[in-house]
Image (cartoon, rainbow, N blue to C red; front, side, top):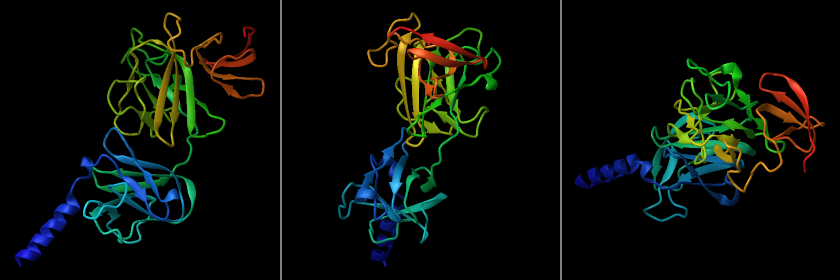
Length: 303
């Protein structure tokens, strides 16, 4: 009897052992191209996968290679559990033969999140957003001393090759007589939610941000160095990168991406003659749509 109780207690402790202590998780199984892929650990301690999967099975393991007595698998509690779901609980086991998460068809845009707090796996097929906009008090006209101006959000430009990547170039600063000076967040539509992008910590410096949170708490980025910035977000991989192109006094901030003989203006979108959006004014004729909705031609003659 004592031996049975000990076995049960050991199994229970193994099942509830928290995954938060893990530094890494890996996806393996017949559905994973190449047989194995490391998950990305988010700043909040959770793990995510983004990429192609084949039809087959996904198993989530706590070590890169199987180690008897050490490796644990995060397997669904229910049989025939599909990877695409709204949140299914998992159990931890050392039994590698237990059924994993089922993938019914091949696709390049699978994403799933291992939520270690609720001990669930949430999966989806990610579709591109129609738009991304910057909102807040960190750019001219974005807010007053009462509220942020929803109708004054500025749009990002979608990448021609990757529909999940958006870029914005413009002036960010810390202005007077506005609410929450120097703060901003990103919206997926010209209103507050449901699609939003936030940093993982309050008042996070945009120059140090590498990962972005889709949804979540209403946290904002904070501008510490006024100037002209280029911000690029990858919605699929939830990454964020900002370059300070020039400081407020007009000097080049970095050698990479500096504004050399290419004027950056306070515009919503810049187009070439073929109607393709540009990050900055190019040599020749440019079509410029301003933040006030006006459209004008700009000719740049400098090399």
